Every structure is written in C-alpha cells, then in structure tokens.
Length: 397
Image (cartoon, rainbow, N blue to C red; front, side, top):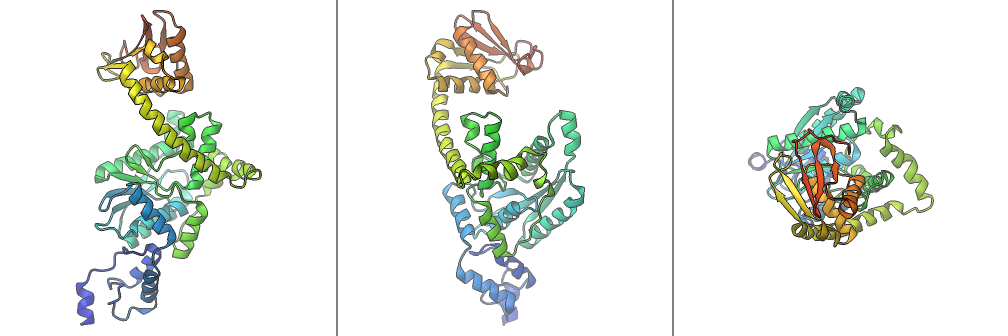
C-alpha cells in the first residue's frame, strides 16, 4: 500500500510552506514525495519534515509578505530571474522557487555570459543550471560580447554589460511571455547606488535610488534585505554559490564605492547604509508626489500633436503658464517635454530650456541632439524635428 501511495502521489517539487533549505533533501529521494506519508523517509526526509514543522525561514517570510503587500508578483505568474551564481541571485532564485503559492510561479532562471571572465563562466553556468534542475524551474543561457560592443559604442564595460544584460532579460521575457523580470539588488546595493549617483551629480530623482518595481516589469524582491541576512539564509539552507572575481576589481566605480568609499564614510557614521536606504525611500515618496503634480501641470501648459520623432510631431509649451509654476515643477515639465520628444535630458538641457523660456527673444532657438529644436515664438515654446530625426545640428549632446 505504501508503494502504491508513493506511485500515485505527485513527486515533491520543492514547493511548500517551507522554502528551499530542504530542496536538496527532496531530490535525494528521487520521485518519492517527501511528505508525512513517505515510506521510510530516511534521515534527509526526516530533516525535511522537521524543517517544515519549524516553519518558514524568517527571510522567506519577509520576502513572501513583501511580494504580496506590494503586489510585485502574483501566483501563477511567469517570470524570468536573473541568476549570476553569486550569493544574492542564488538566494533570490531559491526564495522565489520556494514560495507556497498556488498556482506556483512559472520561473525561468537566466544566466548571462558577458564574455569577460571565460575562466569562471562555465562553473557559474553549471551551478545555476544544476540549481534550476533541482528546483524544477527552467534554465536559459545567453552569451554576449560586451567588450566588442563597448568598443563599438564607446561606452565603459560596466555600462555596456548592464545595458546588454537587461536587453537579454527583456528579449527572453518576450519570447516566453513572462510579465516580470526579477533581479537580485539588495539593500547594500541601494546604498552603493545612491553614493554613485551622488558622485555623478544626480538630482532628486536619481538620489531616490532603485525602486522595488521599475517600469512595471523589473522587480527587486531583495531591495530591502541586507547582505548579511542573505548570507545567513544561504548558510542555513546549505545553498552553494560562487563569487564573481570582478567584484574586487577597483577599475570599476561600484567596487571602489563598496570596498573603499563606503567603509571610509562608515568610520564617521556606522549606520550610513541604513541612512542612505531610508533617505532613498523618503525621496521616492516625494518624487511620486511631485510627478503627480507635474502631470497635472503638463495637461495645463502643453499641447502635443503627432508622434515624436516624426517630422510633423510637435509640442507647444505656454511660456507664461510654465513660468507661473514653482521652479521644481518648471524643471519637471521641461524634462517631460524633452523625454516626450525622445531626448535624453540632463540638468544642463533643462536649465537651458528654462533660460530660453525666461529670457529668450522671439525667434531664439535651442538645437538638441538628433535634430530636436526648441524655438520661442510670441511667448510659446515650440519643440519639433523640423528636418526629421537626426537631421539637426545637434550642438547640445
């Protein structure tokens, strides 16, 4: 009878109220379900049962609560998880695969080979694939030539790797019909990102840091979790991971911030990481409020015709109404205009646009990159591509 029950009941797929700290034990038992009805479950199966009775790991409880409260993921949703074999992404993969949701998430783990560390990528890809197989989730590998693309586009390796990686995430998500892409940024990454953006002269929006949900598809379930909590979870769950040797390469700004700048600043404020995380959260709330106000102002001052960047497309801004707004809203509306016209504005572009609105004479013009022009005429700012995309002088890059 016991064998009959074992044959009829579904095999344990590594999903129950307990997260993935017992998944390896489940797989040792093959197709025998690691449940209370298992025939002679053995030592590994008993440890599985004991852990289930003890409840979920605190980090798993925290992540499940965050996902539900913030509506970041839904049961049964198809998602792509970026997994590099490092500690953060391995923890994320196991935590998501261990959610006791019905229906379960449809997960595909994606490993991206950037072509920068050939001596390490084979072992990393093998570890991610093995973990995906144990967890019963999909696995995909994408190979990139970041160095060649960086040279062609005249970008840093760091920026090019990030851009190409996210392009790979999005392509796979579209191919699979996935609605979310989960990445493993942590609270420590948030603190580092805020410092980096501060060094680069970011404004309020940049200093708000990364968000839990970006562009309605990128989710960061670990963004409120400290690195030491992730390492503790990995240790308690016996989850293997590998360290990326490039994480200690001081040629990269992020590594300089992590290994040198933040430790130096923490000599003066040991709680600096928490302070930066808290400030980022506050700025995000204020950014949301300011964005809502700016959208209302946009409806009052802007008129859009055509579809940028078509030659017939244009946006007209009522200069008098624009200058009647608070300076913070003026800058936001100017930024919205440039973005709507497919430009990539920085603070210099925005200030030049507002200077034209305040002091520019009738007929004065600004020439932005790719042919975008802003002309002042009778107090109205006219934004257009008079010669089409890419045909202008583009003296503002």
